[in-house]
Amino acid sequence: MSLIAVIDFGMGNLRSVAKALEHVAPRHRIEVTSDPARIDAAERVVFPGQGAMPDCMRHLHELGLAPAIARAAATKPLLGVCIGEQMLLDESDEAPPGEVTRSLGLIPGRVERFPDSALSLPGGHRLKVPHMGWNRVFQMLAHPLWEGIDDGAYFYFVHSYFAKPARRADCAAESEYGLRFTCALARDNIFATQFHPEKSAALGLRLYENFIHWNP
Image (tube, rainbow, N blue to C red; front, side):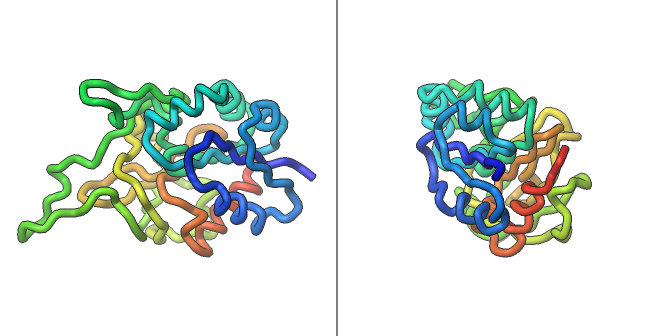
């Protein structure tokens, strides 16, 4: 029975991720772990999370998980979810005033907050931050993880910041919330989503199932 590791760095509810994986991969062992050795031993790695970027990076370094994530990203299929997607980039604006938070640097780019200028709507209305709820996902490149998922399908989001990759080729999907923004990344054996597949009903399960069968 092959192992799928769900990385636990102490930020986020991982039970729903593990349950979704158990549903689509009954012949695999799903293990929520903060042990770098178990991450190294896994056939596939899922890297989910929720919370503020400075706290997430601090927890990650305190647990000594950053090298294990880098090794996974170089050697096996890795799926980032929510802040797990954002943490793959170089740095984030989610930081104390005048600072940036350094992240893992596995995909060139940065994480930015939704700008105030994009949140104003005609008639004086404003979009709320965080961006929360169902929104359409527009596929920007063909990828095995999109198999069986229509372009423009709805997925569930909860976030105030978004990824801005340095290379257009690393953008796997976009969504719209005041502006068009990257909501999925793909590079080599890394795939990552800003939206939550485990909260996105049947299509979210399909994406997890596609990840289980993906052989980059």
